[in-house]
Length: 250
Image (cartoon, rainbow, N blue to C red; front, side, top):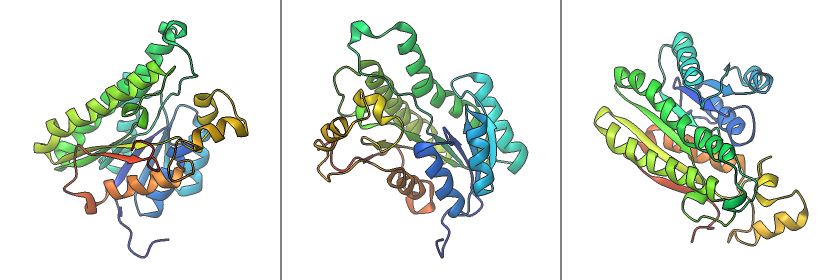
């Protein structure tokens, strides 16, 4: 527990909060004094974590208008405002050539990885604007900066999320709403096996060989970056892209 809590009282909504990066973000924000709303499409997962850290859980498909409205309404009804909106929910893509990628898969990737960010902003921004400011943080990916082959739909979705982050940053700056992106490198989460086409030592070794610091990105790495960008220590940072990738993008 930190002696000085950097997020005391800040109402923080975290999508995809029930597992992986999202779960650790929720834990860290709660430890830093935030009031956390855990949003997950799987209600049991979100509720279990919420009980663990003393948070509120909301079941929602954040790629839908109804889901986005539900999570913001729940936060406002419980806490009266939204200070930090963390768009962490994401969908991976199994390696496939562009000709093998279905229209359905492409549409779902764009919905979860891009449309959800748009919808969250649509409903969170009016609340933040009324309160005099806020923070939006988007979990993007190094795929937006350094695309890999056979992940074209995923790369495109993350590239769009990165541009949306910068667009929102410049649009919302006059309203004192900061918008930044975290770009994790290959992460030690359940999604990794999907990206690398298997869950073997050989698959992991291939990814590790591309990371100068020699290890995978952990949920704690991402959570630490999120805490900083959500805090007042980052009050002059907006439109930034923070690569949490162990040097992979160099």
